[in-house]
Image (cartoon, rainbow, N blue to C red):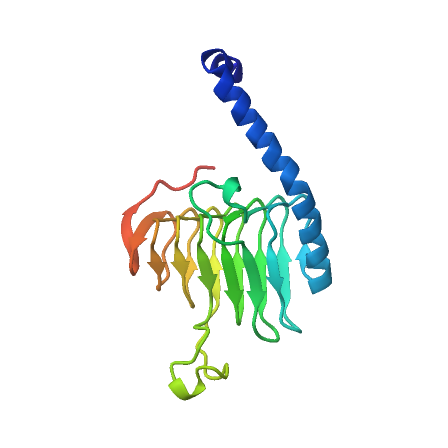
Length: 215
C-alpha cells in the first residue's frame, strides 16, 4: 500500500528508483559469483546467501583462518552506497594463526579488515562507508625495522552484536566494542567501549547511554 501511494505521488521517481535497485542487484550477481570463487581459491570459509556489490578482495596468510557468516552484504561499488564508498572492501590476514571471524547479517561498505592476531565481528554489525578495523600497527615504531615486519604491536579486536560503526571510523588494536553500541562518523576507537552507548571523537569517548535492546 505504501509503495502504491508513493507511485501515485511520484510515478517517474518510483520507476527510476525501482529500475536502479533492480540494476544494482543484477550487477551484483557476477561479482558475487567471482567473490565466492576467490574465497574458494584463498581457502576462506564463506557461508551461503551473501551478496557482493563489486569484488571483495581477500589476502590470506598461509596457516591463518578467515570465516564469514550468512546473509552479509559487502558494498565495494560506489553506486551501491552513495554516501561515498571510495575503495573496495578488503579482508586480509598477516601472520600464521591469525583469525578473522565475521558473523551473520552484517553490512560492510568499503570496509577494510586486517588482522595479525584475531578480529571477531558479531552478528548484525553495520560498518559504514570506508571504515577500517585492524588489530595491529602494520609497521614497527622502530625506524630501523619499519619495513621488515618485525616488532609490530598487536592485540585482538572484538566487535559485539548489533554494533554500528559510522562513516570513516577507524577501530584500532586491543579494542572491544560492546553490543548495540553506536560509534559516530570519523571516530578513532583506541580504547574499549561498553555496550549500549553512543560514542564519538578522536579518540572516541562515550557521549551518552542508549536504551538497552529489548527482549
